[in-house]
Amino acid sequence: MTRRAAITGFPVAHSRSPLIHGYWLKHHGIDGTYDRVAVEPATAETFYRAFAKSGLVGCNVTVPHKEVAAACCDELDDAARAMGAANTLWLDDSGRLMGANTDGLGFLGNLDQQAPGWDARTKSALVLGAGGAARAIVWALASRGVEKVLIANRTLSKAQDLADRFAPVAKAVSWDYLADILGRTDLLVNTTSLGMEGQPPLDLDLSPLPVEALVTDIVYAPLVTPLLQAARDRGHPIVDGLGMLLHQAVPGFERWFGVRPEVDDALRRLVLADLGVSP
Ligand code: NAP
Image 1 (cartoon, rainbow, N blue to C red):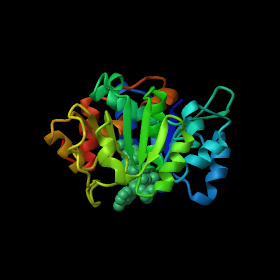
Image 2: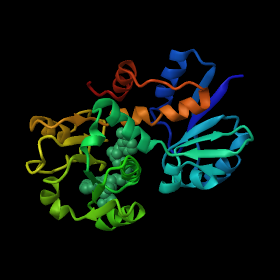
Image 3: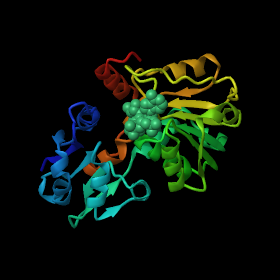
Image 4: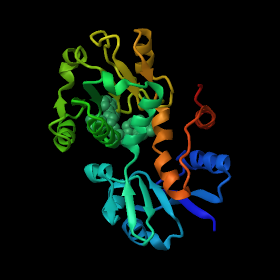
């Protein structure tokens, strides 16, 4: 029987997930589908609670439903529990709704692929931003054993809330002290929307950053953000954000369709072309 999965959220029209999973379904010749299901906020709780009746074997969850989806699951993995948010759901053999959060795994998978050994070189990370993506990344860095994760955000109170969730590894720092902190940073991560097409660039003087420090930006349109370009010009290793989007999809596909897919160059090119971004 055809196995059906989908991206759920509101809105879902912009999602690249159908393109990614569609590529893997075709590549592996699997009898399955991956569609878009728009779930109006007012009906979200009912939808996830009655998920077993949806006809889907599982789904991805995007904004604004990641928290409500987590609350409706019978069981959560460590990441989803720590974040209070789920982006990947599936029904187990007895019809229980299981939830995972793979955003952090996507971040780690991208760095592992593009900068192998980065974790052995990272004692102190600086995360810029304290939104939903930062939450996943702070979890990921802590789970990988990074000793110190500093969080700076325009709204300091949000950085503080996030740091409290992952204390004692995480600590909030004021944006005003970044020049000092950069000098002791092994990994710099931008999780703010600054640098994205249509947004102002992230205005940060990288000169105090040790030249061997890795710089990564989770914004992927443009692929090389002004921050990544400035880092590259100074000789830093850089990793763009597209791989996070692709790697976060891997565990869901494996759950629903029984094959662990690869993030390969053809998939990167396909998604970049769809985004209208030059490689
Ligand atoms: P979010 O929850 O809305 O958080 C946005 C963050 O950006 C907040 O920390 C916010 O600071 C900061 N910010 C926004 N405008 C700013 C400005 N003008 N100056 C300084 N800081 C500003 O969004 P999100 O879900 O975390 O996503 C953040 C970015 O990551 C987006 O560009 C998104 O496309 C990208 N993303 C990429 C992936 C991937 O797979 N590569 C995955 C998820 C997200 P305040 O708290 O002060 O408002």
